[in-house]
Image 1 (cartoon, rainbow, N blue to C red):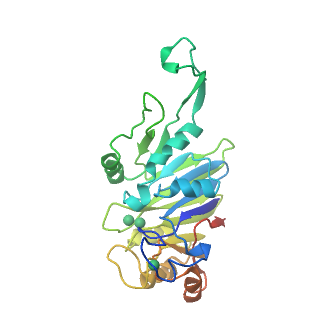
Image 2: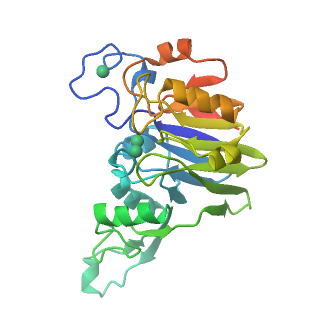
Image 3: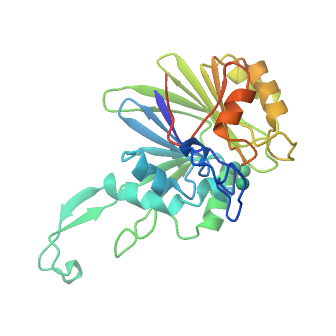
Length: 281
Ligand SMILES: [Zn+2]
Ligand SMILES: [Zn+2]
Ligand SMILES: [Zn+2]
């Protein structure tokens, strides 16, 4: 199993529009933080976690061309506003069919693409919010081409996905507190475990029990100062210690600290993530 960070920044991204601080002006590529999302690969399976606004750029830059399923943590715009770009994966996964040359609708084309519906896993509340934000999405394609994402929601709390070679991954929803319907995900494959929690200000006890001792923990850490809906450094490190993962990566960072500054101030076993970083396990 591998995970690629598509973005590691907070909701406004880093650099922030109009900010001239040292981090926003940094030339270290690890200080450029797009909005949070990730890509998990298990065998031939490709799974997107969230569809952030810069998802298209990250997919192009990191060579992500295969997506079999999408998991949504929640419907805040920094996590879903790239959702329309699912269309491209409907096409890639779709079928090329020959056109009837006598049919007027083909306008001289010989072939056309029938998009494949993308399975999207999310909480029911998130699904409802997505239909309000994107009223045109459905499991049906457009009549005149692939101009809207074709998606099929599922609210299952635990799912098992497998590729053609039967390489499997179990994905379990993890409850989090973010003052908004939101969740994290736990991935288990070949006895290895990875947890992804990009947004929360608190973790319920039952979630802590579920994720104790995982191999890799990805946890949000906004800044030092407290925030009503995000973990700050103190709380994030408190949870990281309680969960006692083999490796912890922090994400959803603002511009208060550079990558190098984070490395210097985090304890052993806790690392700042950066856009494009790949974790193998
Ligand atoms: Zn967020
Ligand atoms: Zn700044
Ligand atoms: Zn959020």
